[in-house]
Image 1 (cartoon, helix red, strand yellow):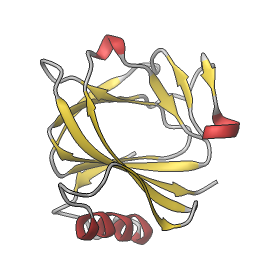
Image 2 (cartoon, helix red, strand yellow; image 1 turned 90 degrees about the vertical axis):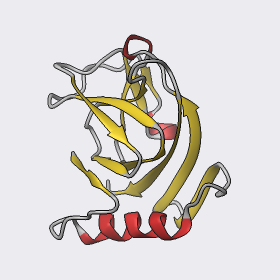
Image 3 (cartoon, helix red, strand yellow; image 1 turned 60 degrees about the vertical axis):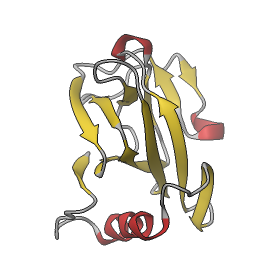
Image 4 (tube, one colour; image 1 turned 135 degrees about the vertical axis):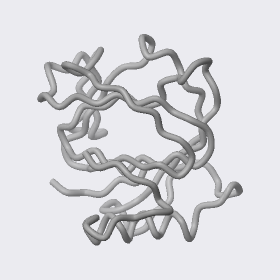
Length: 150
């Protein structure tokens, strides 16, 4: 997991991640349509969404097997959890078809808050729970970049 802000990218950030974030900064605006946008076919693409956050207890944890996520908050505020321990058995396993598996929660979850401009990178197998409300549920506009790594 890597965290940062798109307006202050660290020099040690891997080049491919930096380039993907720079692409989002250059091409995604408030008027960018929701949905999937390809950068390099199915190897590198991003999803623009506007969703309501939900209480932590109502959200399910997830992880991926082949793609890493770069989750970027464009507008709003989002709570996020992550686990430093391996994923347990999923209650919904769509890894083969959709590269996502869900479970109730990660082991020993840690929580942090993301504001506009913040990003987090989750590598395959890293359990995370996005779209958690910080206070009352609220709308968040975000971009999730998907990069094939496995």
